[in-house]
Length: 63
Image: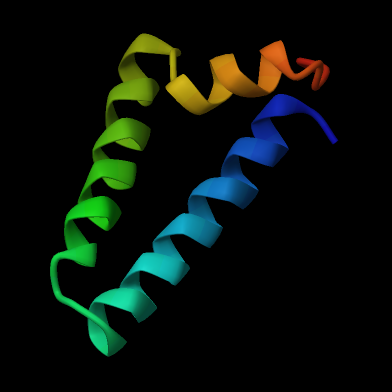
């Protein structure tokens, strides 16, 4: 798997996990969900995401 696929997998996991935590534990978890969404939104314009940089440092291939 490449960086793009890992990024989608991790972002989807974070969104699902934090929505569940927001519902079951504390509504403040929705702030993390919003953070993930905002990062995805800004990366559409800048083509840069902190998770992509981390994955590349870990040696995940770009394409």
